[in-house]
Image 1 (tube, helix red, strand yellow):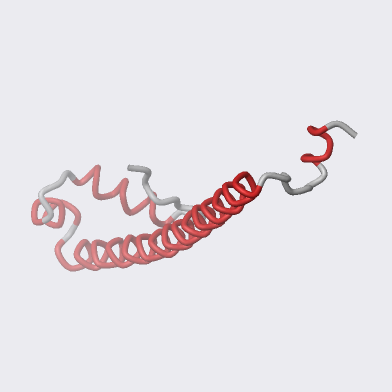
Image 2 (cartoon, one colour):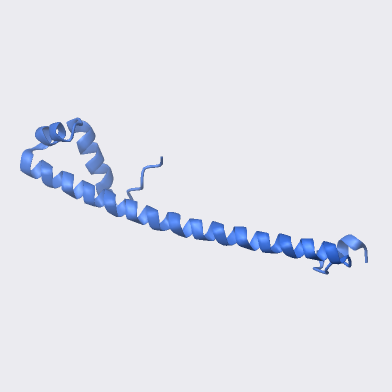
Length: 101
């Protein structure tokens, strides 16, 4: 069996220093992977929070429109009636997605 084949089968190097470097690399890799998984979980949670906040914003804007009318609500929110209506329509779609940065 060649040295390359032996290594590909998961055998440890014979040199003590090489084995230690391999262990250190494996620990570093596991640590980095753990951080990636934690960051993905944090991002997922933040996305859920953002979606919830966007639904609350849309509900509050709709309530303002009910009370003040579209034109007045747009003026109070410093936007145009078209933009306000479009934002509410986008959030009312069943599969509304979070806006990408």
